Image 1 (cartoon, protein in one colour):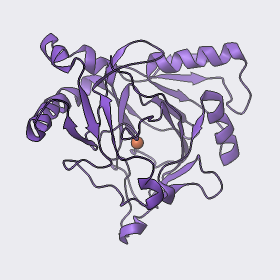
Image 2 (image 1 turned 45 degrees about the vertical axis):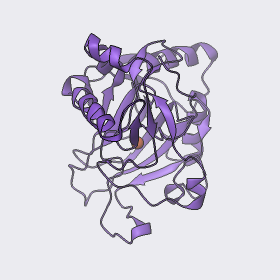
Image 3 (image 1 turned 45 degrees about the horizontal axis):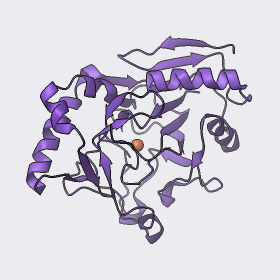
Length: 284
Ligand SMILES: [Fe+2]
C-alpha cells in the first residue's frame, strides 16, 4: 500500500496520487482505497492512463462489479459496461443537432431501478481549458443538517421514482423497448442507510420522484420542494475541476451530481463512464 491521499478543494472529497489503476491491487490496498472512497463520497485518482477502454474496464472491476450501461445510444461499441460521454453527442432520437449536456441537473443515477448503481466513474480523456466541472452534493451532510422535525417527518417515508417525473427539470430520451424493460419505477426510501458506513443519508432524485408515501400528489411535490431547497445548498457542494488523467468515482448512495455546460463548446470534452452494481436501498 503505497499511495497518498489529499483532500479535494471543498467540504468533502479526496484525491489519491501514486496509484496506477492498471496495476492489480492487493487486498490491503483495495480495503484502504475503498475506505477513502466511502468516507469521502467522491474520490479522484490522479494521473491515470486508461485511454484503452479495456484498461478502464479492468480498473473499474477492481473497485466493484461493472453494471451494463442502461442507455443503449451511448454505449461504447465494444463494451456494454462503458458509456461514451462527450459534447459532440446530439440527441439522435429527436433529430436535435445541438450539442447536449447530459446530466445537467441534480440527480443520482438510475434511482428508478430496484438496485441502482452503488457508484459511477468517469475518466477524462479530453477536457476544455476551463469549465465543464462535475458537481456533487453530499447527502450525509444534507441529512445531518435537517431540523429534528424534518427528520421525524421523513422517518419510514418512501418516494416513488419513475423513469421521468412529471415535474422533472429537464427532459430525458424517449426509451427503447429494451430500456423500458429495465424498470417500471420503484419505491425508494427517502432516508437510506449506507451498507458500508452505516450512516443515514437523504436519497432522492428530482428527475424521477412522482409520489411521496402517504401524501396526495401535490402535497408530495410541495414536501419534496422543501427538501430540494434545503439540499441544493452550496455548503454541501463540491465542484470538480477536471485534470487530464483523472478517474473520478462517486458514491451514488450518498450523493447527487450534475454536469455543467459553462465552457467553450468548440473545445472537445470526452469521457468514458462506468457504473458499479449496487444494493437495494435500505430504509434507515
Ligand atoms: Fe448522472
